[in-house]
Length: 253
Image (tube, rainbow, N blue to C red; front, side, top):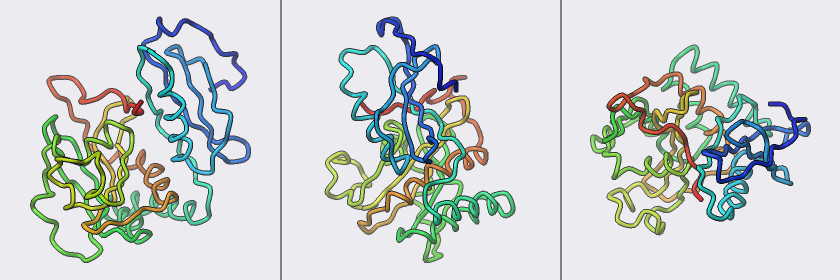
């Protein structure tokens, strides 16, 4: 991206898509920028952030106030850049190495040992109706529940991560966003990001979850985002009637 390029102030009504791009500045802090459909920068956040997640949250808060804009907001794939702490750096590097050497489940173990949550999992979208587990780590080493092997899309928590670009709940039983969902109060903590191909196709989700109500540290959620692009390459690319399930991951406005 050419950071010296002047913004193009075109009429918003003529634009189909504006994309939110996140990047590390010279001080290794996260910033965000809004690009028009032609790729030219239109607006940039005035602050920098210690984590990617904080930058996403601020961009979402700003962009939702744009009135009557006939556009969608997309979160560009996070670059393969190490995080801001030594632990995150080390874990990210180890995850990539283990993924290459020993495969997806072994790499999930690297993430899972950093967190209090029982499960770390990858779900894939074989069709538009369901999510199928393709890898899981259970701290207790017990057989994975049959009810979680394949989950209807419209009953899953994953649908919210795909819709909103992320989803975090430390206590689903008290989370009004999940009222009426079959898994509310069953999976009491759930923290996930979508897995999106370079072409913008949603392939599945990467998550940490537990039957107990447990918060996830911001740094560990940041790490979840960082490894997502590496996990994408482990997934098949589904098509539904010749079309991808989704061509973008929208930021909820």
